[in-house]
Length: 156
Image (cartoon, rainbow, N blue to C red; front, side, top):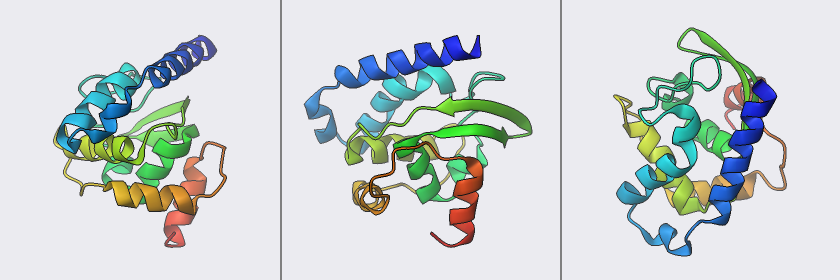
């Protein structure tokens, strides 16, 4: 069932990316962020950021979402796989990479997530996304939580 779920999610993600309107990146971040979230993220993380029990973690109150901005950007760019525990609940799945989205789209949706549902984390700018994307070079693999924690501990 889990494999089927992720196949469906990946298919939806690919279809959504193909239908992306080029002018979306010109929208104000306050409009673009919710639009990208509803189109790309809400299917798994829920329209109110509560996640899907046992499958996809919540965004509301998530220490990852509220934590290091670069870590959240890395996850959005390249995805995440493996076991994680969020708010006392374990999840073992795979988040797809969203590196096909523009820096404006990514920064807007991450800023939206970091400021919704009681979350109060600083915004992420399109310039930060551009810099972080360039710094990751040719990475193609999703991250594991252990890799991200190691980078954070090293100040990277």
